[in-house]
Image (cartoon, rainbow, N blue to C red):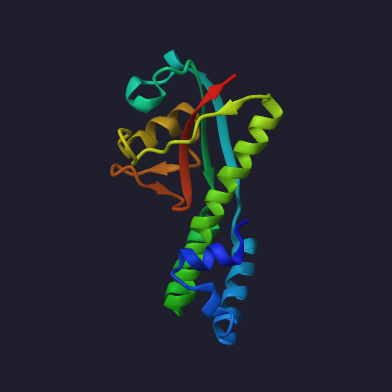
Length: 175
């Protein structure tokens, strides 16, 4: 999970100033522990050959690769529910938990990639997610369908996903 310093930076807090604010640190600690309590991290993944993935779902900069890792990481619905609950009583706490979730999902992605590379004795290109570069955000639906998890991850017509703290990623496998 993310470091406290990184998650607070995501929330716009300058850590060197925050360490002198006992009340803020107390709230940050509470929210950090709340995140650990309510997040249900999970990664769905598979390896695909280029011809198994629609051309529009492969970033242009990855066209030279033949094999791809596609994965979806999520922190689950309970985190979304807790952010919503907190928003009813404390905008600060809801915002901090949202920031914690954003950093936690990135840490989950980083950790998964390291484990995958180690277990498969390979290297990966940088991961790429729909909504960046030449991959339209609606490609999220393609990845969810490829991995067969439409019953676990909902992709709206806009390409946004539920649970909110969910990412889809593709990386070329370099052997």
